[in-house]
Length: 122
Image 1 (cartoon, helix red, strand yellow):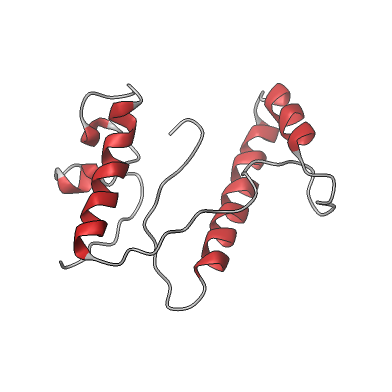
Image 2 (cartoon, helix red, strand yellow):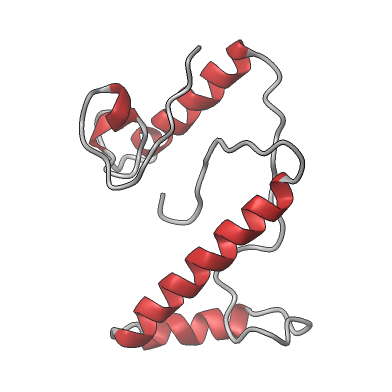
């Protein structure tokens, strides 16, 4: 999406650390890419958005915190997958969920995907 991400992840104990690691890694990669490109205005904005108490970083790419929800049933899992797949359609970016190149809907439609998706046996 243009300003947020949805994903279904699992961990037996510490999902917050998983999310923190994903955000840290992706922020470092995205900011590094911006530094080598021409996105100086975006970097200046990210610098202004940085929380004052964050002394180990220069930029604020991701919003503070995360909002994990426990998926407690197969029905809820299906609902979350459908919500995620429909998100770029509702935003008007694509006509069909599998047309969004970063969506696991592509996997369901038998199309290639730029990232690995673990399939669950349901």
